Length: 194
Image (cartoon, rainbow, N blue to C red; front, side, top):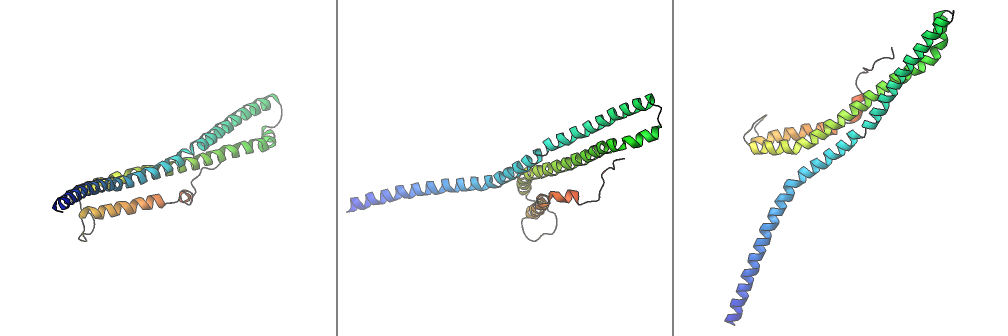
């Protein structure tokens, strides 16, 4: 019975040691996951903002091309118009008024293309800024927490760096929550067709 009890105690000790080793390993893995999760979340968010920003590049190329084509059409039309007017003995103003219905749509196309290019460019910049903010947040937070002794704002008895981390988190959320439509809600600053 004593041998059986000693054997049982040894087996129990061995299993207890294995359990402690597994527990230590699990704690290390849990800590690693906890450290990686915010970085992975920031990376995923940044990636989605980056994809959205790059989605505006083809639209920018299209509007830029249409603008250049409209300007080229205006140059060709004015060259033909001037050459024809010089050959004819007609009144220049009369000739221009007759050709205005042809020129106005080209001017409108150039103006509209310039506005749409500007809109696409502002949206691309908006999402690129959100991408950069998302990428930087985790690094800033870790750096501030490593500093530990930095104070800003009220000292409410917490770790001084926590005030800055809260401020950083609040500012980041405000940046990321800002809807892209706010870009267009400001005062109109677009150039006129003239």
